[in-house]
Image (cartoon, rainbow, N blue to C red):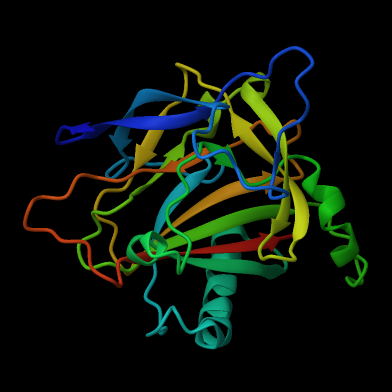
Length: 268
């Protein structure tokens, strides 16, 4: 990976186009082939998004400032008690939604991932949901008095390492993504060993994809991006994303505690 003052040149892992007669891809039912013959790598320029005016309604992502009262993001009870209400309020503030519901959160740590203790960075270009997400959440809507006219899902991503260098998060301007590039994929056991099934999008390579990242994100910053919107079908504002590693200077040693929390909420 090479870098300049305003951009990185990074390797992205895309899904190879489906062959004629090839079945729909599936994750989660069996271990994946570590050689990943279904993927291909491409170098793409990743632009520095700081100082640019991105928005949820256009590019599909925005960087927010938010101080949190959470002291230990490894404490799931602490996160549920304090952070969930914080993110509900933030999502409602940014979207103007009538109601905001928390779906889940994931805390990632590259050092722990190397030891098999925790999830690390996800390096496959993808989007969490497809239009079929509507059927996935249908049972949840049965408990709501009034059927919402619009549902959108947002991911709120915050990092907590000291220097913000390891595995920065790259987001793709949704206006540069086209539906024919997307590969519907069934993901089983989403969320845990006995989780539910959901359909996600992998993405084939496109020269048109415009990638961005926020270098050296700090603890008081939150990257908010949209992964589903019932009012944007067929997904005119789709976003794919990937997490990439930035080379560390020799004096920077990866330490426990360099991690990020990915938090999903949906609003109506």
